[in-house]
Length: 190
Image (cartoon, rainbow, N blue to C red; front, side, top):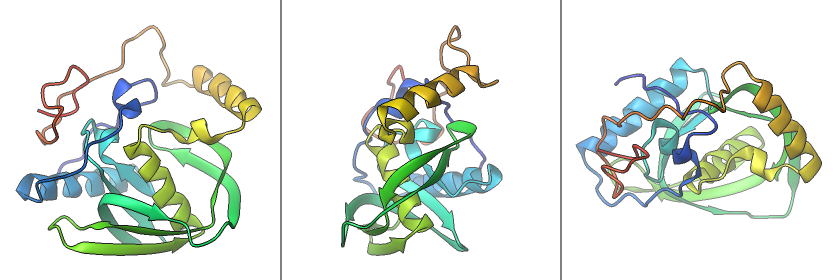
């Protein structure tokens, strides 16, 4: 397990939809371990593989003392109930904006060994699962804000200490070598 650098807003990898995992092997287990270690080190509730520069459909979570991961998630919503509350992102550090999400979710996918799993969540867990699955689709939570709130969020992001529009995004090669985008100029794998 190794703590990896987290890609920040502006890095192109965060906007590219991730590919489904097809190999449930040692490299995938290493990726899950690195995601978990990095998420815990950053004190986050979740972390998706693209946030480490890996273009695969994998995320980890740590919500209400429930720690786990999901590979190739597919979400279902059992009802129309919604929640709205502050949401943040390790790729947009230190900033939180009220975001509307579904209150309840059922996520189906696989564990790191390829065994089918289902995660049913409500409240914060539902928010986390939706947020991390969005990352796998190249969507950031600020994209879910209404136009006025998104405009304000972008203003605040541009003023953040870590944001530097003049510098190209830091792109590092992932140690995982996973995904069909190996060797990509965006550092998705290899």
